[in-house]
Length: 154
Image (cartoon, rainbow, N blue to C red; front, side, top):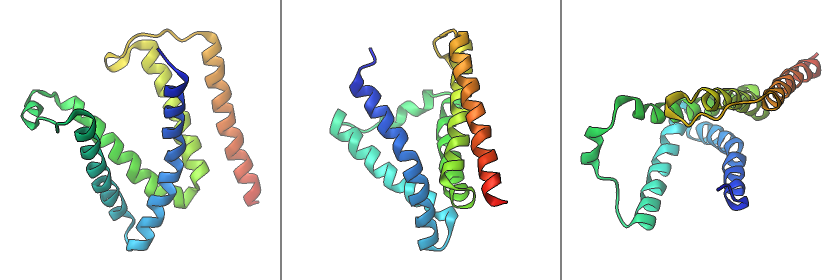
C-alpha cells in the first residue's frame, strides 16, 4: 500500500538528486578533478550503506551469495555510476535544471514503458490514455524549458 509517508520519502529522495549533482560538481572543482568526485561519493555511499545495513539487519551482505546473482543484476551499479558521473560532469556545464529536466523526463518515459510492457520482470501495469496525455504534457514541458533557455541566451 502506498502511504503518504512512503510518498514523502520518495519525494525527498528525488529532491536530493539536484542537490547531489551540484554538490558533486563542487566537490570535483575543489579536489581538482571532476572524475574523482564520483569516487568520493561512492566511498561515502558505501560506508553509509554498510552502516545502514548493519543497523537495520544486524548483518552485512553474504558475499558468497553473489555467485548466484546473474550478470544483469549488476547493471544497476553501472547505471547508478553512469548517472552520478553524468550529473557531476553535465550539471555544471548545462545547468542543474536542464540536467534534471532531461533526466526526469527520460525516467518517466522509460518507467511508463516498463510498467506497460512489464519489462525486466516488472509487474504489468497497463498505461491508459490519461497517463499518456500526462507524459505528452511532460515532454511538451521539456521542449518549452529548452526553448525558453535558448531565448534567454539570444
